[in-house]
Image 1 (tube, helix red, strand yellow):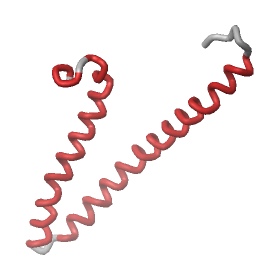
Image 2 (spheres, one colour):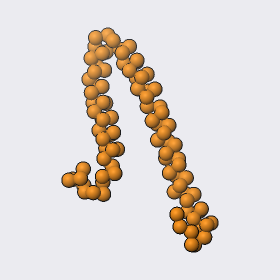
Image 3 (cartoon, rainbow, N blue to C red):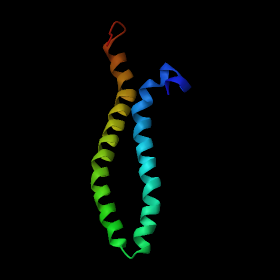
Image 4 (spheres, rainbow, N blue to C red):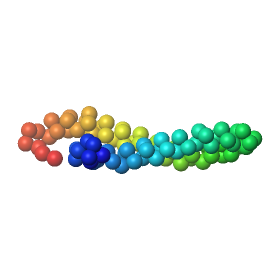
Length: 90
């Protein structure tokens, strides 16, 4: 990313790596799912989806909480700053 976009995008490297791994897993799971269905083992897909669901739920909950906290900071932060007075600095 450094060569293509410059220094200002270095903070996005971790997110891009996570998105790349997710896209790779989806791209690999589609043909694998077709193979399992073709050989009559659709139960493997159900077990796999249950396992992935149990892994993704805590991640989604963490992301939602982070978004809520950031939203609170963005909307309530200026109110706190204005209530603290003009000389207040964080």
